[in-house]
Amino acid sequence: MPLPKVNESLVLVDFEAESVQELRAGEEDGEDPIYDEMLTMAKDEFQGHIDNLKKMQKLSDPADWKNWPPYKVLHSIKGLARTLGMERLGRYAESIERLKETIAQGDLEEIIETVEKVFAETMEAIKQHESPS
Image 1 (cartoon, helix red, strand yellow):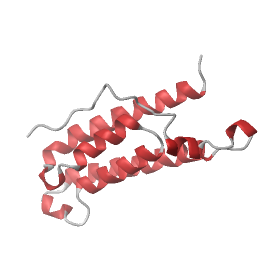
Image 2: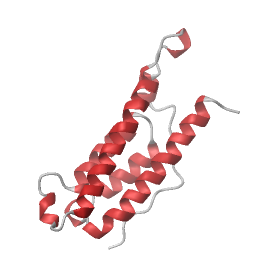
Image 3: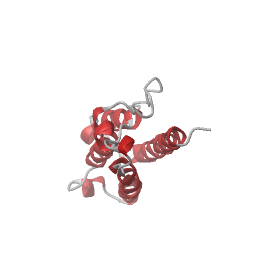
């Protein structure tokens, strides 16, 4: 079964999302917003999720996924993305998460490549938004 594709029509980052607005509260008053801190933490957390998926690729028996299957990793990526307004990444992660146990070991390479690409595009969009030319 083919994997879902990224919905390119979605914005990379919804800066107007309620969660983003809450994390950026106080920015106009000179307060240090927690959004930037959360982005820094998200990079490390995201890399941890990718590392987990890469470890799963190397398992000789997908039955070893029993305690931490790929869809649970995608669930965590979805939560991370949605908290930070990463709309496109969050929706893609959700579409993969919905596959549950039907995710095959051979699917992981495409999933990892796609998630890494969308995350990089998202971080670049955030960077451009924070410091427009």
